Image 1 (cartoon, rainbow, N blue to C red):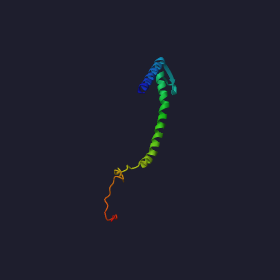
Image 2 (image 1 turned 90 degrees about the horizontal axis):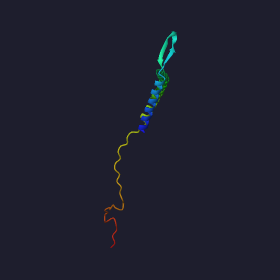
Image 3 (image 1 turned 135 degrees about the horizontal axis):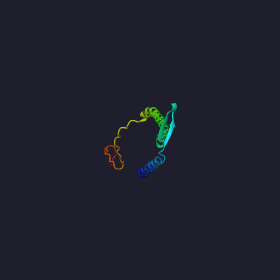
Length: 110
């Protein structure tokens, strides 16, 4: 399975490199105030991806942090204390036990 994951990432990296090489052109971005920025296309795509991805990750992490903070006291109280080790149980068989009896307890035949 690790081989397949590695193969997937290698193939994805090769595809991205080929895409970047084929689109290695300059794009003019017209900014405010008459400014013009010349940016390579792959760089523009990476920045666009990061602008969309970073806020999503921040919202996800904030929600995860909030849930951990909410459930931490519940989990702390739910943990049962460790039980003391039980004393060893001895199994006795009544047929194997011999009990000494007082001879006076049983009447003897004359």
